[in-house]
Length: 224
Image (cartoon, rainbow, N blue to C red):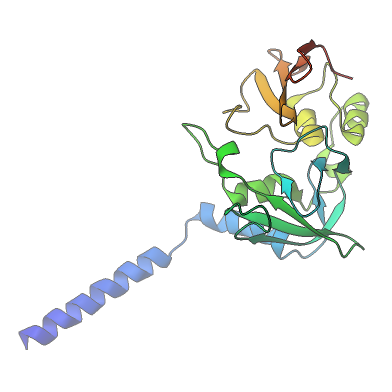
């Protein structure tokens, strides 16, 4: 009898543990809903910022600004999915596959861990998905911005006086390993693998200067 009681208690406790583990927090539910709005959408999904690439099959999430191809912000995309591992170069990491509307060519946005972490934070593939794709249209994304900012975003450039929001829409998020916080007054992007771009902001979070460093020398005030 004692054995049966102990067995019953063990089963009961296990059931309670499993049930508790299955309960999702409100934050988890909201995150899943946001991800589903991209991967299982009820309507159109768009690119949330300009995205540069050299090869459609291997687009590094670091978003090098000197690459020949560019997918403009606001481009409608289809079939956005998280996959593992990456499709090329024997890099065992995750990637996001997607298609442009009316184009049957697959694109692969590759998540490389070392560029998306620092001592305090680690970016996930889900974070990258939500930063790169959105149900919002270009007009909704740029609502409230100045005409100058909107024109720069369309061109994929930055200009003195642009807000941080406008820079994010034009160039995307700076890689986390060199820009640990968006509250920082200096953001670091990459022009190419051997050249980085530093964007400085004033106390009002507006661009005051940009410089690039690397192969070919160091150049100041390279904002267009």
